Length: 284
Image (cartoon, rainbow, N blue to C red; front, side, top):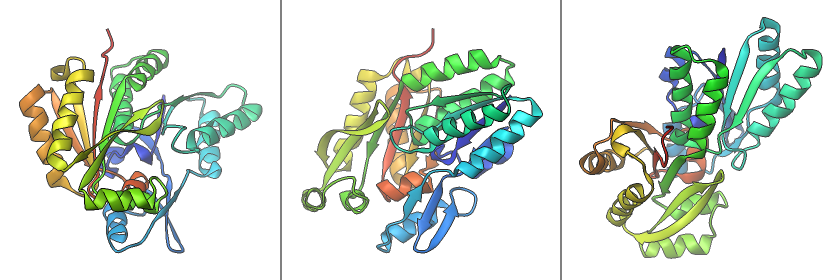
C-alpha cells in the first residue's frame, strides 16, 4: 500500500526521506517565483520574507502532480491511501478526488482511498504518522482507513498568533482588528471546527493564552497521559518549548513532538504562531 500526504501536514523533510510516504507539495509564491513547499523552499525563508514585509501567496497541489502519481499507482496495481489537508482550507482534496475519478475511467481497477482529514499542520501530521505506524504493523487498508477517519474526527487544534497584522495581510482578519489587537497586546485563540479555522476567544498576552490552552486541553482531552501531543510553531521554538514544559508538568503525556509550521500554513498565520494538537477521544 502506498500512503500519500501533502505538505500541509507540516512534517519535516527528513520524515519523508526516512518513511514510506509520498509527499505532494503545495506551492508557495514569493514575488514572481514559485516554490514547491518542503522540496524547494524552507519555511524559515517564508517567515523571513514576512518579517521583511512581503506577503507570500500559496496555491494547491497541481492536477498534473496527482495525475502522474495516480496513473503510476494504477499501472502498478498497488492500493493507495491519500490523507488530505482539510477541504475547508484548500482545494487540494477536491482536485485529488477529481483526478482519481478521471484516472479510474482509464484504469477501473484503481484502488485509491482519499480521506478529507479536516485537519491542518501537525493535527494532520499525527494522522499521517499513525497511518505509517499501522501499515508497518501489517494492518489491512480497511482497518487503517477506519482508525485514521476516527482519529481525524477527534483531533483537536488550538492555535494562537503573535501578530494579527500577518493575518490581516492575508485577509484572515480586518486591518482594524489587527491594529486594535496590536495596541492592546490581544492574542486570539482559535481552533479547527469541521475543518475550518474558527476563533474561540481573545486574551491579553502570551502567558494568559498558554494557561488557557492548558485549561481547554483539560476540558477536551481524553487520557492525555497516554497520547502523543504535537506542538507546531511559526519560527519561534522558545515559545513552543515553553508550551511543552507546561504540558509536561500538567499532563505527563507519553510523548510531545515539536516542528516548525510549514511554508503554506506559515504564509497565512505568520511568525510567532503556536499550535497544539491532541485527541478528544481515543479509539476503544
